[in-house]
Length: 124
Image 1 (cartoon, rainbow, N blue to C red):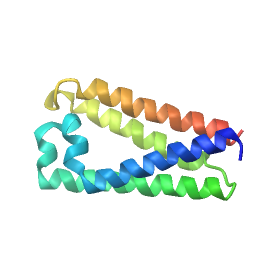
Image 2: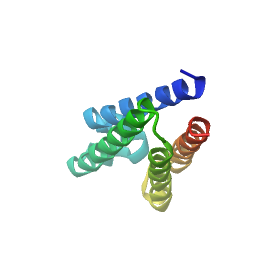
Image 3: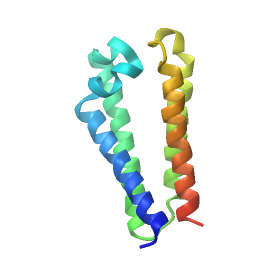
Image 4: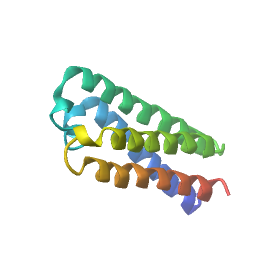
């Protein structure tokens, strides 16, 4: 298997693991991002939904990769989700912990760029 496909598989596996971790321990993973509200039950519901999105979307991409199918649609959706997180965080930045918005821009924006780079590398 060529390097771009192996690297893509590793990135996708990490994103699946992140989604599962977010489902299992939403407060622990989101406390820095959302502050004390991450401990509230309604917020945990949304965080677990986000974790499910991560796990399912990237599992679909990993399945496509394993079958030799295009991963671009999957990774475009992934990048869109990451950018949505960035925009939503920026919109609420005054109610979130200090540094949350720049950190989300770095992490979410970086993840979107990685997804797009992987899509181009694998499907070119």
